[in-house]
Every structure is written in C-alpha cells, then in structure tokens.
Image (cartoon, rainbow, N blue to C red; front, top):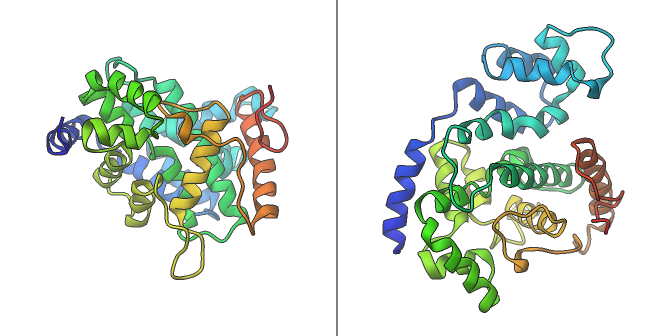
Length: 289
C-alpha cells in the first residue's frame, strides 16, 4: 500500500470520527493550562451533557470518601481537582468518540486507553520537574500520540500481521516496520488526527516527531517531542504497550543532567498510576515482577 493511498484512506477514516464537541475541545484546551482555575473548568463542564454527569459520577464515587451526595459541578470539580480530571480526560472525550465504532482487527480501545493515559500522565508529570517547551500541551499530546494506530487498524488491517512479523524478523521499531509496509507511520497519522481536531501546532509537531525527537530547542528548554518519546518508551517498558515493538520500550527512564527531576517525576507518576488502579508499579515507577 502506498503512502498516497493510505493517506487518502486515513483522511476518510478521520472524517468518520465525529468532531470534538465545543465543550470537549474547550475542556482539553483548559487542561493544557497547568494552573487552570476550578471555576473555569466547572463553567465548561456544566455546559456539556456528556462531561457533566461523568464528573458528578466520579466525585460521588468511593474514591473521595464523600460524606454526602454531590450535585453541584463546581463542588465536584473542586473536590476532584484538575490533576485527576486530566487522568479521565481521554475516556470522556476522544475515548467516547471511539466507542461508537465497530470492533476492528487488532484494535483494543482498552489497551489504547491504558497506554495513552499513562503516557499523558508521565509526560505531564515530567513537565512539572523539567524545563520543557510548550509544557502545557504535554498531557493532551500524550493522550492522542498513538491515535494513528486506530487509522491503521481501520484502513490497513490486512497489513498489521505483516508489520508485526517484519519488526520481529528484522528487529525494527514500530514506525520502521509501518513505513516499510505502508509508506507512512502511526506518528504521521496521529498528527493528521490532531490537525483534524484543530489542536495547537506545537502539540501536533510533538506528536509527529515523538519517535524521532529533537534533543534541544532554540530557547534551551527541552523539546516536548523528547519528553513524549521518553514517556512513551518507559510506559511501554512497564507492560502498558499497544501495537508496539520491543525496540520501542525502555526499562529505565534515564536523562543525564536531569536525574533528580526525573526521579521526583517517577515517584509522583507511580503514585498517580496506582491511584488509577494500575498494579505492579513501585514507588520509583518501575515494574514489579
């Protein structure tokens, strides 16, 4: 299959995806702001018939040890907090769009969601401890960096076995095998999706380059694509991978010159991941056998 043919099919597949609602788009944009005001989030959520009940359901769950029923969005947002809302953003917005699609060969919304949420969380946490350009885009970039794999499953399902066999036989990364077979890779397709949803240019660029990131920026800050790449590899190494090659995994998140910040980020990430129900992760963020 040529790049041109798959690009055309990808365009048709993306057009079948419903556009994000205005509220969903505003919700994701607001979550990019690291110091977003709860009142602003509440104002967005209460206008959306899908977001509002989900937030109330979460606030009234046993996780928060509530004393009484919460029926006010503002109260719910204050109780849940922006950081927790970030962890549920995918399943309430983009994840909701995917539920309406039929089952596809090799596609798993559950595995995709687990991987995407973990990468988003780790990318966002690293930005709390390291000097990263466009840090506000880290979480949303993590959520959708692999959405191109949905396009491959939808439009090139017959080629997935060939891709998987090729990467094992020739020891290729996922994008190397995809390019060999399809002439295009999931990172480029994910960038197309991000542009379809009219997400910011710097976010689209980070997604496009997350398998071949830059090491520096002109401002001296770390590129978002590099943060996304390291988070993606580490999460794959934890066993939370989806249609990835073993070459796309790393057992340790090593970053010379930023050891302390990385360690603090991994500790925060491990705690947050455990709070979302992932087991087998220790206090340093490493997988427990």
